[in-house]
Structure formats: structure tokens, C-alpha cells
Image (cartoon, rainbow, N blue to C red; front, side):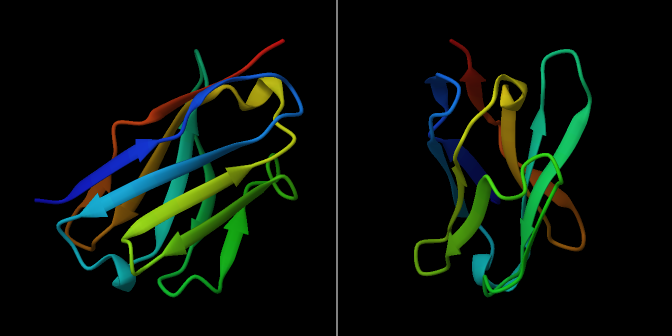
Length: 116
């Protein structure tokens, strides 16, 4: 069974940092691209970042470029998102997601709230 479990969210003040994790199981993690996607309150899904299977190619949405860093540890089957200089507009439910070809899989999300 494919499982993606996000963690690391919380309530922080503007300018602070958080590191999200996504622990995976049930598939060959090291073979697949991984994504972070978020949904802000009252808004649609926004793609945040993607990383290739070996971790040497990444891409970011313009809204987070320069502040967020995606990474992965294939030995631990875990995806990360380092979020620095957080802004109130980063408040959202953050999901990790992957497309295994026959189906896309998502975690249940971890809430990030940025507020003073």
C-alpha cells in the first residue's frame, strides 16, 4: 500500500522557518519525482515544488523561489521542504504528492500557519 505522511507543520511568525517532511512507503521512492503542493484557505491547489528521482533537479513556483528548498533522502524514503522567510500568504495545508504512472498519490497534508 502506497503511503505518504507529511509532518513538520505548525504556527510560526512571519520571517521564521519550518521544515516539512514526507515519509513514504509502498513504492520505490528513489525511482520517482516528488512534488509539494499546497492549498491556502478558500483557494485552489497551488503547485509549490518538484524534485527529480535522484534529487539533482528541482523547480519552484515563483511565489516561493529563493525561500523554499526541496530535497530528498532516498535512503530514508523521505521528502523534505525547507521553508525560510515565511510570509502570511504561505499559510496553507501542504501536501506531498507523486505520480506513479498508473495513479497519483497524495498525503493527508500538514498545516502551516504564518501569523503574528
